[in-house]
Figure 1 (cartoon, rainbow, N blue to C red):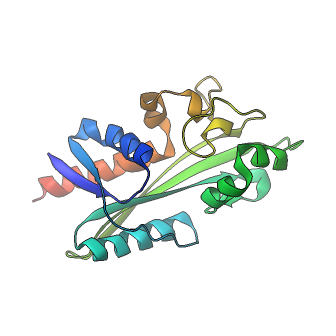
Figure 2 (cartoon, rainbow, N blue to C red):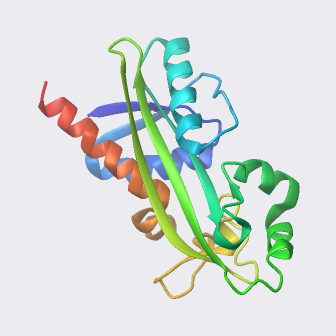
Length: 190
């Protein structure tokens, strides 16, 4: 079985990622490292944090960073989604969107694999397009999950989906499946 080390302090994220990777025979463990939280676009943040954690642990690691990009807010909160959620929450973002007809949004995730020993850094992106609901769905899931509904699955918010359903279509699921294929190919090539 292949094993990867995910740098996160979020046990719910660990469980979600483990469920995504399990069908590929990849075990996910949580790193005992500090995730460096730089400010910038999510691809930069993911890559830098992965490289620094790999240097700290002297081992290969995986880091992901995600953001919610709302079209009518010029991409806000984007890479500042965690900060915006902490300060505004779902109610605050809905207040910013009050009366705004264009509610299109994209959830993006960038996963970076870094191994400082082999000097290998590889990033994988996943994204899903949907919209910001006008109400707060089931209060569950990560951050803005209760107000984001992807186009297609019956208008359900991410927070209203079971883990398997969400992982099948989510930005994080897409990015981590790309990582899984990369890791399996890496093993196959020796």
